[in-house]
Every structure is written in C-alpha cells, then in structure tokens.
Image 1: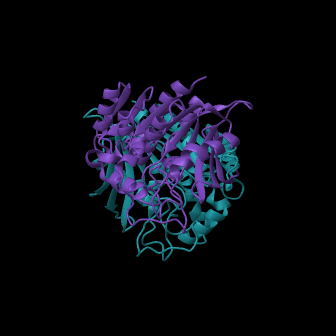
Image 2 (image 1 turned 90 degrees about the vertical axis):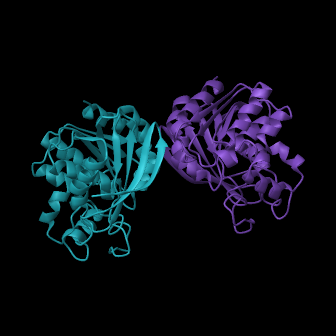
Image 3 (image 1 turned 120 degrees about the vertical axis):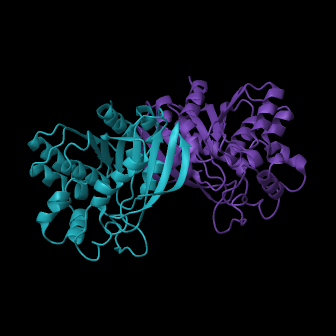
Length: 279
Length: 279
C-alpha cells in the first residue's frame, strides 16, 4: 500500500499535499489531498474527512474550501478524497450527476459500474488504512463532513459506522436519495431497481431504520437552487426530530450551493469538530 | 460608464460580485471582482486593491485568496482587476510572461501592443472612477496590494501616486523589472529599448529617483522558485534602507510562489491595511 506524492505546498504553518495511489477498491489510480498542521514530532493528530460533491475532485475544496487556517488552529488533519474512479477504462454517463465525478459513495452492484465504482469500500476501508499507515493520525479521533453528494456520503458513512466518528457535519447535503432525482438516477443506476437496497445509502432511511448519531451540524443556504428539488433539508430535520438526534440544522439566508457558501461556514464546522476531537 | 453583473454570491456576510465593462483604456471588455461586506445603508467603506500576477485573471484570488473573512471583519471592500486586455483582437505572445495575462500594469508605447495594453491608465484612472461611481467606497481610504507581477503593479502605482494610498503591501513582488528577465522582456516589448522609460515602472528605480511610501509590508517565501532570478527581494530591502522607507519585508521559511503562500498571509495583510484605513 504505497502512494506517490504529486505536490506539497507550505500553507498556514503546515503542509498541503496531494497524493496518488493505486486503489484496490476501484481498480484505478486515485488522488486525494491531505493537510497536516505542524505538530510535535511524536504527536498524533485528529482527522477530519471531507467528501466532495458532484463534478468535484479533491482539488475543489483544497483550493477553495478555506479550511487550513482553522485546521492549523485546532490541530486537525484534513483529508479530501476524489468523488469517483477516473480514467479511460472507467465507464461514464453523459450527465454530470452519474458516473465520473458522481460516485455517490456507494459500492455499485450493476454493470457496467460494479467493476470500478466501489466508493463505499474505498472511503470506508481502503483510504483509512492508507491514511493510518502514512500520516501522523489518531484514528480514535475522526470526524467527517462533506458537501451536497459528499454531505450525503458523510451522513450515511457516519450512520452506518456507529462509534467511528466523534463528530459529523454537512454542508447542503443530499439527505434522502430515495426522495430526489439525483438519488433516483444514481442509486437506480449503481444498485438497480430494488429500492430496499438503497436504504443503506439514504441518511433519512438509515435513521428511520434505527441508526443514530450523537449529534450533528448542518448548514444549508436558502438561495441554494437545489434545495427544493434535490436537497430537501426538512426531511433530515424531521428524521432527526423523530429519532431524538440533537441536530443543529441551520438555514443560512441568501447563501447558494457554491464554495462561497462552504468557505463561509468552514471555520465554524472545523471548530465544532475540533471541540469533539480534542484530547 | 456602465458595467454588467456576471455573478453575485453571498459569502462571509457580504457579497462577492464579478462584473464586466467596456474599457476605454484598453478598448476591450474587462472583468473584475468586488467583495462588499455588509454595512450600514449610508456607510462608505475603505477599499483594498489587489493586483494579480502572471497568467492570472480576477478569478484566481477571488477563488483562492481567502480574503473575505478578514475583509468582512475589517469592513474593507476588496477589488481584483484582470491582468491584461482579453479577446481575439488583442495581440499575444507565445510565452506566459508577455501579452495576455501579462500586462505588467504599463501603458504600452510599442506596436502592436499600444492599442490595447494600457493597463496603467486602466488601473490608475478608469477603474477607480468606475468603482467610485458604483460601489459604496470612501476613496479617501484606499490601500493597494498584489502578487508577483501584481506586487510590482502595487508598488509602482503607490510610488507614482503619493498620497493616494494610505497603505501598500505586496506578496512576492517583482521589485525591479530593470534587473530581471521578466522585466526585460515585458518592458522592452511594451516600452521599447530606451531603459530610461522603464524607470517609471520599476519600484527600486522609483525609490532611487525620489519616490517615497509612508511604510510597506512585503512577504516573500524562501522556497519561491522565482526568488533568485526574477524577484530579487533584497533589491527592495536595500532601496528602502537607502531611502529610509520603514519597510517590513519578511522572508517566510518554506513558502513558495502559489496561492497556498498568498492565502496564508492574506489575513495579516488585510489587518495591516485595516489599521491604516480606519476612520
């Protein structure tokens, strides 16, 4: 399990790196970024996973997420994986919302997707082992967050793995793929028509089926053009209320779906994770 | 003097806009970005100009500069112009360091550049009038900064216009185009072989010829690959010392020439400008 360093840049008193490795899960090279704040030689730092949204690679949040100042302040390692397998051998779809750049953090069971689109295994199993082996991380102190499709990823991975993450948050997440066109297309394509198989990839369904989180922070812009048709934040608010999950779900007036929104609230999310990842 | 709004996004409790107008100076459409923090209805806010480096447009710093949190905190309007005229009618060079994306903030006198490459007039005269007419700015409180070629622009514009800017800073500036290959190529091309004509576009020469600044903040990375051949920060340190300009010129260990460097020190620069632009 090795990886190649694509680049490292000094930033905010730490090191922003970009790395590529050959993934067993996807059968392709995969690229991810890691920010490591400076630390004492033997220190092990907590980790915050950031899962990106549709069309994104590791690069979007790495360039535009404005997370490094807060991660340096709180001593948190920030990891940004890609959103799908890449390469000429990987099947794709004409839409931006399925195929490359749109892995939805699922293990596909349908052809032609099943061979490479194993993003659940990639994020849940393979990448954590790689990170644990190569970076100064304390894997007992992990948090997870993400944006849009990546918010869906963060919520569902945290819900399926109780106890793994001390903290979970999301920016403008897809909260119920069962209830939106993006989800219908992606889960139908990757998993087939049996909607029972989709429930493991639906935050609201997981909560309805008994999964729990200790708490949760979500920010959602009111001017987000995807709110009404795709994101449907209220479904998560209602699911958390029914399950007595103490969720802080904030509607942010005038904010849209872009990195201008994400970067605005990034430092608050990192501080929130930082409180839960301490010591 | 009108402009079109390309986009506005809510960010950090303010509005990040991108605008295009037909420039009289360059004879082309020009695009710039403006961040306006929320403010009282009748308030007039101070302005910080940011001039970008080679190959950049307004977009690089707008997306990667991490300036909005600090501008919101200090109540500063942040303006990022483009670095050259654009369009099919505009002549160009094969290199990244001359022609489009490389206006060097000069008024070209040589053909075929003179028709469109009038970036000094564009930045010094036309854009300020446009900004003053359309944004809630207090033009008595202006600061200027920039990166690399844009640091050269910031320094030379401030030196040539005593009293216009209360504060001047730069990130990894070209300090003496007379003494580096980028400058030789660009000023030779835009202004012709008479090096006496170049002195108005050389920060160190302007200082040697008597121009002064009240003070100055410069950050320069020690791992910047352009430091030795192109940037030559020590020439500015020496020029300021000879002229008794109280310059704070900081060599930042391990930092390179990228936006990872710029964004790291952006908040400190904005705070430094903020102190001088207050009230």
